[in-house]
Length: 290
Image (cartoon, rainbow, N blue to C red; front, side):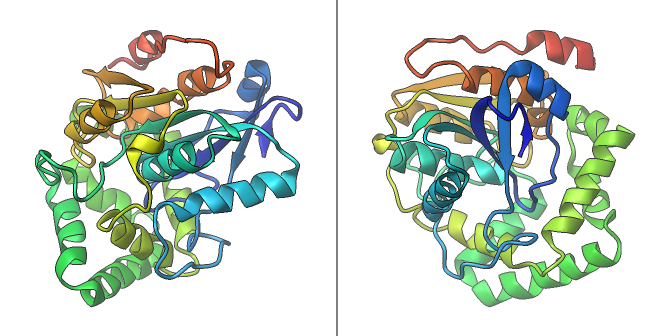
């Protein structure tokens, strides 16, 4: 936990791969916002045990257990990239405890009607996810090899992604501090093996275990329009099916831009559930030079 000890409780769900020490606002910034931010290693990552065969929906039970352990009654949830579907699971299954939810640069369910799931997606992601549909053993082999290389050289994944980045994401990755945080979270995520990564890929290409129609809490859906890893049509599709959603599409943003708008997202999440709050991050993106 970081931020204000008595602040509004918000769970931060990392991406795929990722860990609890991924990019987040500084503790002093969170204190000034009146936010207590809780991040943890999702199942199979970092210090968390693997949950073989898990579904996306299972994250809701994990978060509820953590909240119980910490004595937290009500809270909000934000998930970035691979954490997005898991945040939506909390919106669907924990409405009795969750005030607000945000899913940033998320993917849509694998069986999304009228959506070209792979359209506009990088070749590396297409290969990774399509492999899960035809040969799960190959998913184990390929991600195990890649995880081993990343453990030997934590910069490996960043180098692998570099040719596929949009100009917005390239600028973010080229920032020394941001690159250092990403390398650290990838290294921590895979220190015990590739299991969380493998299980995420398999879970995203199967039924999530809940229906979007179950979501009744205020839900922010944010996406950078130049995202090549989780294409923007995924979030548009989600917005059309979540009646309580607020869709925010950023023309001057990509996949990793979600890290830059996180402070504004957290401000939106900290507002009372019964209060309508418009989301705005234009000033931050302007300051970032995008």
